[in-house]
Image (cartoon, rainbow, N blue to C red):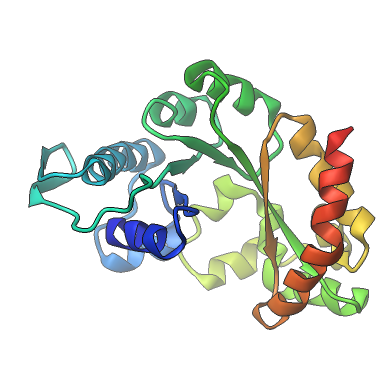
Length: 241
């Protein structure tokens, strides 16, 4: 991850931000080290961030923690612009642990309390990044169907989703989620106003940046064209008020 981070920073001319979180069971349990409780995962992430930050500072790094040990590690060809680190948080414990160590905040809910607590530690100078899925398509019915097929798990909330170990668990947890339930939390179709209204709670809560996650890999080009032409201008204009 650290090598990836500084390599992308070099390739992107300093525009990269490394986003980190405490993980999810679906991806983590496969490495056969077990799936620890949230407090242990956060302890591991604290140590990982300390190691990554030291590597980004340059020089040789030695580290002996409760979970990780590093001996004489070094990153070569560091970018001129240090890679900023953003941490995914959902509550006061995450703020307490990660705000002192990271540059920016990432959250999936428009919680003004998170922004306020983060700024109390960081002084208001960092970015607060809200993450929200959208399903852009000129065919609204097709967009809703795709969102229901691929993203209905989103209705369960992160506290549930992080703990599910496999696809069968996601299917079971989301089996009663209807397309209309998905439409309440994910803007589907090509209505710019729907996206603006879905994003609005984030900037009203004090978030400075919004990450739009397009659902459906084969529709990325159309989404990016629409974002450049209509979505981003509308969001910038609406957020001024």
